[in-house]
Length: 104
Image (cartoon, rainbow, N blue to C red; front, side):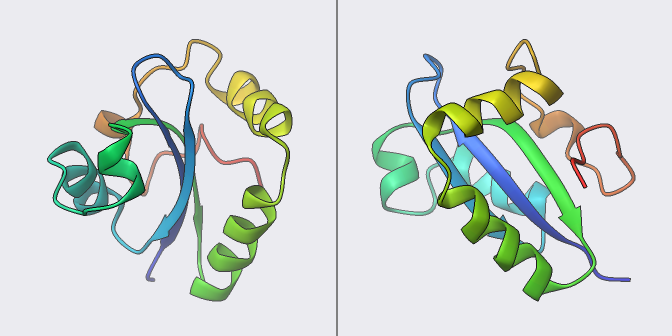
């Protein structure tokens, strides 16, 4: 079964948030950490994965990405605080079998 991910990145100082979607979280994190994708994430040095959630369909993932993108920053921070209170970099744990960081 194919999995798709919604994720939130931040920088070292946790002052910028980025929400994205991908079908391969490990690859996508490698791309972000090595600034292989020009644009917002490389400009603001967003390399720290602080939240991710997996979905069984791309439509569900995109729908949830849009939902989170529509939230105020305070609601995104509350989500991260609830599931990752120390704002640790979860990129080493970005494994499809990991369920601890699922909100749904």
